[in-house]
Image (cartoon, rainbow, N blue to C red; front, side, top):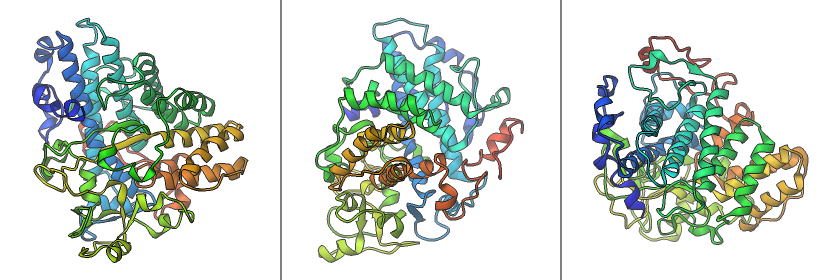
Length: 490
């Protein structure tokens, strides 16, 4: 089922569609009017376009990896201090508007928005049974991509009057950047529509569900300090299912336990179609998994990788004694080598002795093409544990500490830890701490620190008033006729 959703996205559809290539040819875009006249004439056409809109989710591996590296959870790592300079800069908080990886995030996420908007531009062309569900999935995807963009870059170029029109490269001069409030208003509207029109369970694994839309809407409310709204919608996810905490946490991130009961929304990857460094977004595999891997590794269970995104001793020390999540989340390579014969590896740059065990390659995968770029490990984008902790935070901020404790302690019980009885600000701190260890390695911590105002105290090199946002790629400002102001401090 995973294969059927993601495999054919380019092959069936995108060759005549839009938006992004492996070089800079996308700057000049031919008119797509002729294509649209011969498309969207059947449900099959809409479904093909929808699959193409899903495809850009796979490119968000970079958002996850860099979101972790930007925080105090991990260091850039790699082979040397000059290995992928853009990644090193983000780790050191020295990134600039010419950072290649930030341009990739901008371009790939806007490509996702545009693929969704291509469907929405022609939403009225052809009617068929189940069309509202297709449009609901489309609007969920647009909300997902916009959410990624707004949390990285803040105010965005956006057509507030007609949000369904594609933003074609070279046409940015007709749009102004709109405030984060405007972008979040659109995200909310898209997700409210999705909640009303998506099923609780999909017939095809990997498609957005009502619960996924509710959870993302709750997260959008949380980012805006809309505590009551967040608590209400997240409560509904918790109380109506079909989700629960996975009983055996040790299996959470294994490839044979994907799309399990804890997965509210999961990005699907496969190892049957690879890519190369010239077009990383073309890979159907999880590129971050190869980047996270152990350098020149020989031994059982794991495969080699590029030793980026290495956990710090500080985050390892955040786990309480007896927390069963520690050895699932963090691979202690020295302990692993001591307990398994034949293990060898090379220490990379900034070697800490630890690796992100949730997302490093396992042996036995096909890895078609480049083994380091084509790993089938799905990304658990929204887990039920995350929903519980977001709801706990919302209730705590909204004055309902009893409910906050209940949700927090469900997560802690699964981790074999004792209950928390704190209230008020102490409970808030406990929830923040729990989010860090529960979600370590999953790309959330930097944005948690920023939205809660703790980043300047926790991240070395972080400058308040600047690093809450990343810079708009300078070439995008140039393409817009230099009419967009750069983010503060850049």
